[in-house]
Amino acid sequence: MSNMMRDSQIMAQTKDENLGYMSDMALELAQMAEETGLATLAYLFRMAALEASTANSVLAEPDDFPRRVTSH
Image (cartoon, rainbow, N blue to C red):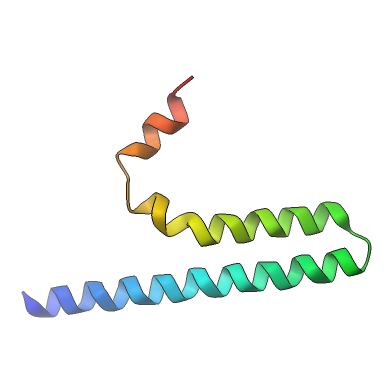
């Protein structure tokens, strides 16, 4: 049982690191796009960075997600 817990902790840490890397990379790409005059692309990369940085908190609450999507 302790091996499963350790493995899940390692997987969670790896996922956090990957999401952090994706967020950082998206911000760098946004800056590059803005410097070359591609404002719309820069905006899209910033939104991707935001999604990556908040993905962990959304995934931590799976019961709330369907209600947020379907609520009017």
